[in-house]
Amino acid sequence: METMKLEIVTPVGEIFNGEVKSATFPGVEGEFGVLPEHASLVSLLEAGVIEIEKVDGSKESIVIDSGYVKVDENKTLVVVEGAVPIIGETESEIAKAIKEAKELVQKASNSDFAIANVEAKVETAAKTRF
Image (cartoon, rainbow, N blue to C red; front, side):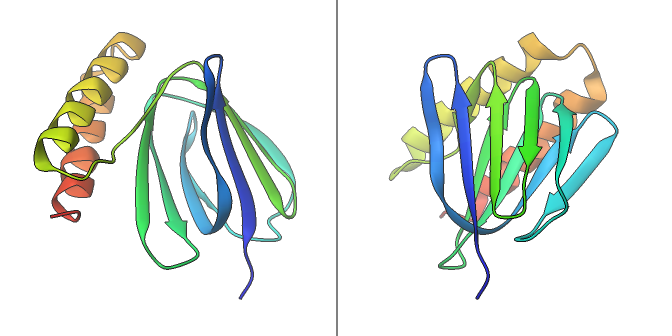
């Protein structure tokens, strides 16, 4: 099975670092997916959700504000100002992450559509965890 290394960093540190099957990014010109051995590219990212499919088949969602992604054949590097992983062991931890994610996107985007889109994706990601 082909995998690629995905690294997501912010000014305060690393948010994600690991091997993944695929990832979907909120590009400024629309959402796009990346698989192992993808052609090299650099793209600006807008406020939205990075959806990750891990090697074990599980999924993870990370809400970001703005930044960029640099894709090489076997490594993808994401550099963003802020990021909130939608993770937690309890519903209250998930609820706290959702609240932080919504606040991050509302600060980063003045588009009601972008905010509603992120909220819908976050709610869906949270429901799949419980």
